[in-house]
Image (cartoon, rainbow over all chains, first blue to last red):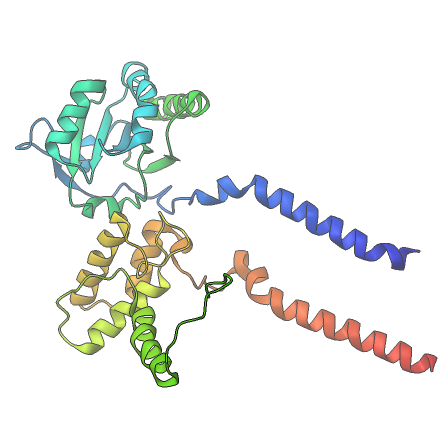
Length: 179
Length: 144
């Protein structure tokens, strides 16, 4: 009896694997960053509104901060923009824009249309600094603690759920910095 | 090929078929997104191609750096070229990519505790099925 049912059992097992695989397919596209727990790479980049100013990741040490990778070409950045505005108002830490592989004029037009919610922007037109950050798409959002350690990376647009999650993490980083 | 009634087929002589193949096949083999780069010598270019083929393009996950035309892949190829130019070894270059993008960038994953099933799995399956088959054969031959 069991012998006859065996193929059926194996088939059912394969079916379960297939369904489980389909359900986690989206998650598997997300690549966990090996940079979590590592210091934010040293980078000095020009500003967007102020191309003569050079901003350095080292200057931000001493306080937690958010690094948000965006570009005017990036459709999903428009989707997450309301949450970026909320982060700018509610997080209470510097919200640094990382303008990635963009054109200055396009980026400025985009900011004029949707609003500039960031504290300031670092510009990486070439994409060289983005490689050190392990950026592979936009938007991506990094949380960096007061010691300059990358503590969290959110890949993809921020939605209501991930916004709450990010806010919780930022509050933890802020209380660590105050301690 | 084209499958419709009345179609008589391409009227090509036997040798012409070979000519067409000779023209088309190298094109397929060479098809890649790699832009012309100022390599110093052939060895450098061969190393570049080899590395670009075993590194994954993280945005277009089922393509290698050599295959992909994505802007990020182009940036990474430029980086790869610079690293080779700087005299970095293949090992150092792989480490450079892994420290930024994780093991995922390697098409050939490293042998580690979390990849042991991946590497040992096929051997375990092969041994398991060999044992199973030999058991079945032995039992059947005893039954005769």
